[in-house]
Image 1 (cartoon, one colour):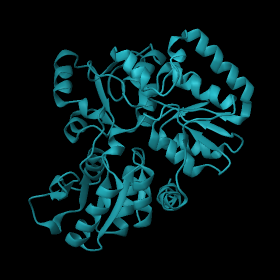
Image 2 (image 1 turned 45 degrees about the horizontal axis):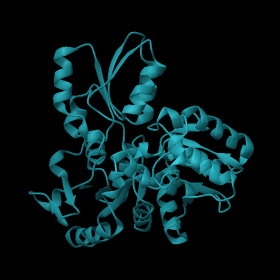
Image 3 (image 1 turned 90 degrees about the vertical axis):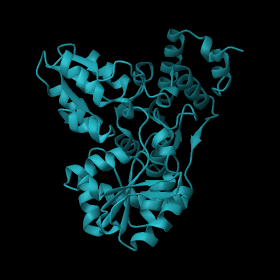
Length: 367
């Protein structure tokens, strides 16, 4: 069996969807969209392939899409073209009669998977013994529903890359210390911007179940979960150094999920929305090296032919888990809905939803 055959076997959809032409799948998707009308809503994340994003009713980042899904009260079926934690958030924010569907259940997020609830509860017990009741948990929205619920239950909140600074300021007004899950880089970069020195940041290693810190524990202000984005960690200081030598006119803009060293060496750093807006507002003929997911970089390049745009790392590939959502899986998911047999429905239990929504609401109240 070839690798391609093995991949298709594990895809969870009939082989026939891989033998259709792109034109045939496009026509079939259009037919289902026409048939279902307002009963169907398709949000698409910025990192999706063009073959998928062309059918999105709206595009955006993860929380933005979940909120827009929640605002759409008419849609009976929300086919979320993103990854699992995004679909979970959409399910928690939508009405009980609405069904959230993920076209491919294998579309996960390696960062979200780096913090499971069992590891987090063990870490919390240990941190309570070390620091007492002085720690407030914050979680990036790129986390599971269970982690969001943990933060909600313990007085914490969610954050996005757009509002992380504001939420850390809020958290420091509540408690002396912050536990930041699951992305250490976003936590480190944000805290540093707010004036917290690196010497006051510790790292929690969930595998070894221990705190990585050599100094006086009383000095610790931020505890960073040892997690990261497998895409953004691939951008390096060497990428920037090479660019500065070979193309010094290029401006470097990166996502704050990149390492602290990369963010410090860049000209600008900000959320996906910030990157998109910066490129849109940039002068014609300006040159940009972008440190974020390749599908978005390519889309920006296509949408702004008056600017010179490249990836900061020329060897980058798209987010592999996000790209499990493809045209065959989207076509199959939509046709199963049209047949009255929807598949891959994402549901979050009521207790998890209650506490996770508290964490989300604490953030949204400060939007």
